[in-house]
Amino acid sequence: MGTAQRLSDIAVRKLRTGKHWLSFIIQQLEKTGAAHGQGFLNAEQEAETLLAHALGLPWEALQKALKQPMPETAAAKLRHLAERRLFDKEPTAYLTGEAWLGGLHFRVDRRVIIPRSYFVEIIPEQIPLWLPDSTKVLRVADACTGSGCLAVLLAKQFPAATVDATDLSADALEVAQLNVADHGLSERIHLHHTDTLKGLKGPYDLIVCNPPYEPTALLKGLPAEFHKEPSMALVSGKDGLDVIRKLLAQASKLLAPHGILVVEIGGLHDAILKTWPHLEVTWLPTADGSDCVFLVSGAALKRGLTKRAVPAKPRVRLGLPLTKAGKGRVR
Image 1: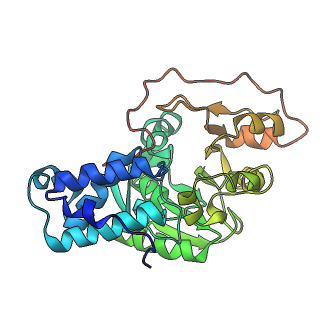
Image 2: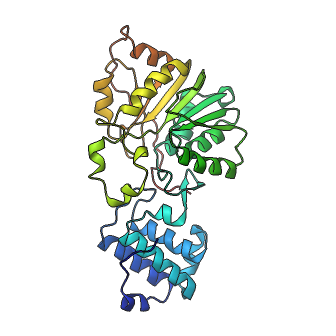
């Protein structure tokens, strides 16, 4: 799909080298107020990715091409990509058809939300502290898997485990199937078309979920780029808690007493504490200091959802060194 708006012919004719194009696209992204946060931290990362894609180069090899003249075909392709990014507000990951998380490559398109998650830190650095013997982690579930990226990260982290990955979107599962196959994990990752954890059979040693958690009203205020993503992967009812309510109820029946549930909840920290005041959760540290990922054991989850619940403990922040990985692209 083309765009009705175009970059200035006069400005484009002045661009000779890869470096000229890179500087120009960064300037245009900043000038047009492009929103980042969909796998990229800033305009420079997006411009580098678009340039590398147009040249057909790995991102890591881009520096060598910056001083060289831009081939005519690559310049035409980059111009088209830039115009779609700038004027159609198409996210860069959809334009290139790929995203990176935890150093791994994944296919993405409009059928799935663009991968970005604190689990890129949590899976390798935090979860092993609660499940220290990875050889005994045999059953794992990834609810709301989307592109399947977290299921792949989990399978690699726990090599003895089988992973059940679910999504309500059949379209998303088609993309997830491709990514699972790309990483050679089709025998260990099983995809399920279902609502959160419905129909699965426990017990699980580990359940993770990065669910849709934005309140419905908030979607209207998100930048145009985010409206290109599937809305069902972003919003979850009036208060953002609809999927999480299902998740907690289902996980309480599926999680082994020694197992853990880990959930990313965005800006719903206070809402979680208010809605489930008796739930004994631990808030896991992240590189940016956000209280946006909680962990609860199987035993505590059952206890916290019944009338026999004990008073909630004060919030716990583990005194652990923080990763530098963050939420952005990690190669």
